[in-house]
Amino acid sequence: MNKRIWHIILYVILAALLVFSLLYTVGIGSTQISLKEVYSILIDHIFNGDARINAGEFESITFRIVWLIRMPRTLFALLVGAGLSICGCAMQALVLNPIADPYVLGVSSGASAGAAIALLAPITLIESQYQTTTFAFVGALFSAFVVYFLAKRAGGGKLQPVTLLLAGTAVNAVMSAITSYLVFMAKSPESISAVYNWQMGAISAAQWKTLVIPATLVLAGLVIFTVMGSRFNMIMMGDEDAAAMGLRVKMFRSAMFIVCSVVVASLVSITGIIGFVGLVVPHVVRLLSRTSDNRTVMPMSALFGASYIMWADAFARSSHGASELPLGIVTAFIGAPFFMFLMIRNGYGGRGK
Amino acid sequence: MTICYSNICVRLGGKDILTGVDLQSKEGKIVGIVGANGCGKSTLIKTTFQMVHNHAGDILIDGKSVKSYSPRDLASMVGYVGQDQSVAFDFSVRDVVTMGLYARKDKKRGRVIIDTAMASLGVEKFADRSIQRLSGGERKMVFIARTVAQGADMYILDEPTNHLDIKHQLFVMDYLKKSGKTTLIVIHDLRLAAHYCDYLYMLADGKTYAQGTPTEVLTKENVRHVFGIDGYAEKDESGILDFKLFGA
Image 1: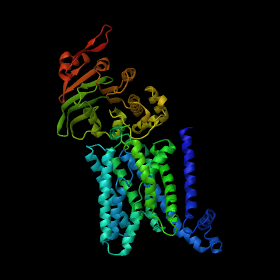
Image 2 (image 1 turned 120 degrees about the horizontal axis):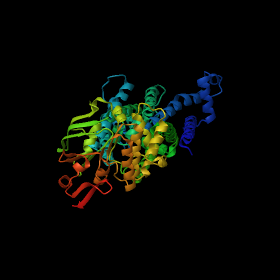
Image 3 (image 1 turned 90 degrees about the vertical axis):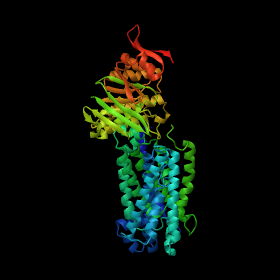
Image 4 (image 1 turned 120 degrees about the vertical axis):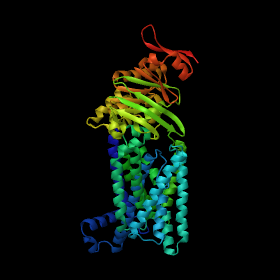
């Protein structure tokens, strides 16, 4: 089949999957709500100004579950999935290695340490929600650059897969130690449990008002990465080739690392670490779409990743009765074996081919 | 269009690789760079795109420093193919050649440009194949097709015939000759150098050891000094310049 036609079909399927997943997973949880009911409530609230709810056709508790609890949470899952997936895709291109993602490269734990400092250290510089995100951003950016230069230095000027992984592991260890130390030092039980939850990767805290920053940044990231798609393709051919084709390699890499860090920070500062999403999704998309062209892989990764995390989160909140499984555990159970599989198949994902 | 390297010095890892090399392309001609392994041939041409960090000296294109051009403008003038053939991701041949369009100012009729570029190097039959599934030689042809898509007026190629079988070696060299573009190549095969290059630079010990036509450069003495073997360039009965090899 012609690739272009196949891509159009795939877009339609992925978009339909996204809409279906959104409506269906909103109904999943300790209180099950049918797809039809979710749909009616949303239509009524958005387009009819609550006419049927006020007329008593739905229970107001159901409305509140759907609109105030599940909807922001599911939308947040959507953003997390989309955001981490496109960042994974971008990072794989930037470090020329198919095993990279924000978690493996220590960017997530850097963001996490930054957020822990903001949450637990007694300093207030700006309004608290922005402060967490800002600190997370600084942590993410710091980790990204440390990992990149450490790996490059250790690899004798080249980015070797092994040194990249080692650098990621080392930075992960330091950043996790910082976070754990801050939790250890923290006085109030509330802040400890907040940090604990968020270390495990929980998105139950999502509310409509906390969605604004991540939504804006994920969308901006998606637009930037898609527009820069052909440049990402070029950098995937290696620095020398990219430079010969006219790309300002250093500037592009730095700028895109910053965009990645901003997007990851906006998500991780609220959810904590959710690993391996950015690793799994772009790979699946490349397999499905049968291309590595980032102009296609970026938007498809966003669509697919969004659906993936909505389902993962629906599973996390419904599989163990009233108690919730942290989302990070679900993604790790799926992603880590996939990671091992890639290691074996690609021989560390080296450039040897 | 000509490119001129003057007094290029490169120091890498505490070692002097190049100590003042001067080199100039010739309009519409193939200029070859020969020399023993590790003499800095590749390093020299890599300085064109500022890929070598510790280098001194000037590189001028039509009298203007390469630093005054944006990387994109530079790529629209100079097509470069390096030695590294490895690709970490699974792009189709068409995807790879399409990347050449980035440097072009006029991107209209991009599809035609790409198809023509692929056809001119005979890689159109692989268009939808993954670059990772191709042999080293086939990849080389694809990368050259990409520089054709860039629309550059000048080629700078690092061992363009490396990995190619004899038929494709001749095919590529014939292609370059026929293209009539200003070409600078690093070349190991002295027979091909003698056959196809209009002018040669022989590098040794970080400097230009000899330069001139192949007959002037590939003399018994020079070849002995630089490569430690016995051989020289000479015209055969049919008037074709050949490199005669007598042994080490």
